[in-house]
Length: 265
Ligand code: SF4
Image 1 (tube, rainbow, N blue to C red):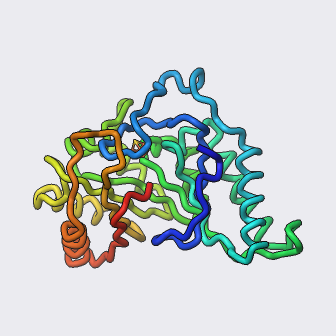
Image 2: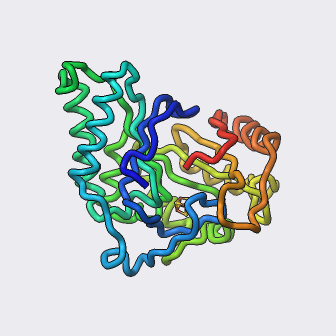
């Protein structure tokens, strides 16, 4: 996967530059049942030896160039979305990278730049994380630098979390929820699939809503899992199920979820 994995009009984020900071191979500490990137093959305990991370300067240069080129074409980027080939916070220089990305964005939006003297319109920075490293201070500091930090939350119980997200290291929903409360810019993304712990079941939905009530996120994104993953046992939900979950959330917490009926991250 390239550093700039896509530039496209996103239904939730507008014109979006999606940035993969992790390199060619998937690097993740989860193995979610619905993941479209295939299984996580690099062991977390051997990340330093086995993973080839992209250099910070290369990532920042690629982002700067894409922002400039887009402005030149008259199609300014509304959102820089850091997600990509796995869990972005596993990049060993995540804090430094985030600071440099934010500086580059500020540099390009505050003055005319080298791309034909064009000035960029304001571009939001968004990061999607599975939240597994939210117990580390520098990761929380880095995530708080984004305009929006979207934490994945697919279940409201430990059992559901383990079953759906299948963490590859010692992890718990409790730890993630505790960390998520330290974020000033928290949104939640929930991917919905079928099966035993699906939010289409009333008890699971209730637990999830309770957790959301406690977190009080600025936004909730509801994403429907689709078939493009390597798990043959994955079950799917209908569009009506998605709207029912969204409706129930709004009724209970007065939060209007943004519903995405195709997999987005
Ligand atoms: S956290 Fe994201 S990248 Fe990692 S396994 Fe889950 S869906 Fe895939």
